Length: 334
Image (cartoon, rainbow, N blue to C red; front, side):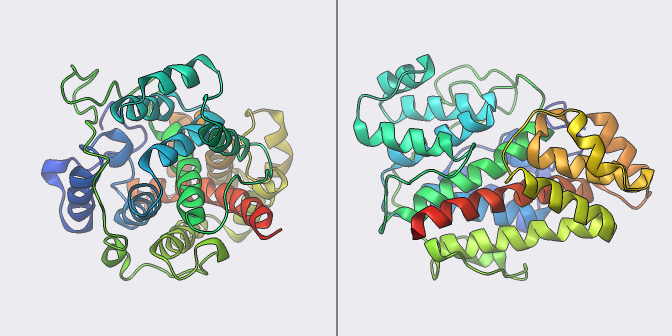
């Protein structure tokens, strides 16, 4: 098992095939070399494809400036307190030619540009509750898709990457902090929307959100929601109900792990509690997911695999994100 990915053995780029190889090729050409934050979901090609599709269509393609979407992703990473992603997007700001902006945000100060300050404030605030968006109409789907993908992937990363891991400068001219650290590609590429749609063939289709209906972003988001929801099938109906209800009570917002989890889990049998606990933590306190908790769940059924592990974590994470999405959608509709 890679020391840079916890709980599963990821698929390395030199051993990838099928959908995983296709995703790796697109990521490598359009975003970065294949680092641990990409490889962590590779045991589940379905989730890898759906997640990459949402990121690519919202954050990389489209008409909104790359700088603005990087600021939005940075704000969501700050809301999730995931140092790996915070440092990644600070590096992206620097590689986009805005080192002073990166330094300002890193100090905890608001950007001098009112537009960027408003976008950063909004993205950070989506981690705590509904807040009015500083945009509408054209571009809204790109901003919303970017912030929702970041909330999702940061939860999975907090559960699957070692604490304290950071990607370095992502500049190909700099020494990488670890073997396989990601190197950024040209973010000024003019990418055609919809190039990831073939990757979604055969995956479950969900209801597209109003903020992105009839667009590749809406299709990608709906597919990711529907695909991740299949992780509920790894639990008993009673355990899945506890997961959904507990995450809903917190509106999907992050909170420290603690005794509050004992009450919801008390009605379940011990084997049921093992899986429900991992899924709830993945949604609300993913940094608290331990190797022992995952091993305890997998010990309840010898058929549980790395593929299942990624699905359970993604199910908890995406269940949380659907509540954040609902709150964002309500503010956009008002």
